[in-house]
Image (tube, rainbow, N blue to C red; front, side, top):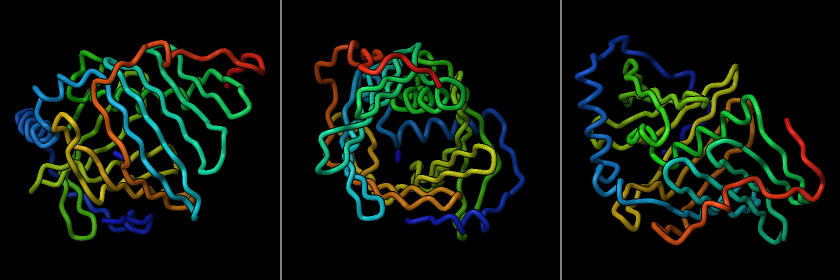
Length: 246
């Protein structure tokens, strides 16, 4: 997932204080899975490709993401008019980044955790934990700008915990929140659509951060399911500048 929610709305978030039991979690997850396209349809998606046009401070970026079950992931970001691109990948073991000059860096710590969360999230590990060990918990209900949301906490092994705000009327995951230290990042879906296999897709996403970073608007331009994809594209490429680790 990548209504506009700006950083100031963080000040309006309230908690109901009510916690639900496991039976409530089972019910919420069942409705969420159904709204996402249904377990049967989602299980038939072995790989996917999406292309978003993202705009930040008037600059246009093309963001291409390829995911392949159970955990493979590749994301390429290219500025409009620029031949170079930055890539991020995960092959089940190594999280890596390649910059336009050809430098390949192995990512560790929080940077590795972020890539793992993106990778297994793109492969729906919260729905299919057999793809990657993932824990889902039900948090207290929260209210933003007068709207009440069911909140799911999703934690993938070696990843970063993030919260998914579910609209209890539509069961759609409308907001994703990640908190790291003093930084809060929000991704809010303004429009949904259906993918090639009937799966739920975010068509328009507004992303903001509490550190004052510019707002990013992302619009879905292309989506494919189950194309022929080799797992070799997810492995760290050979670096033209020598190996690095951060």
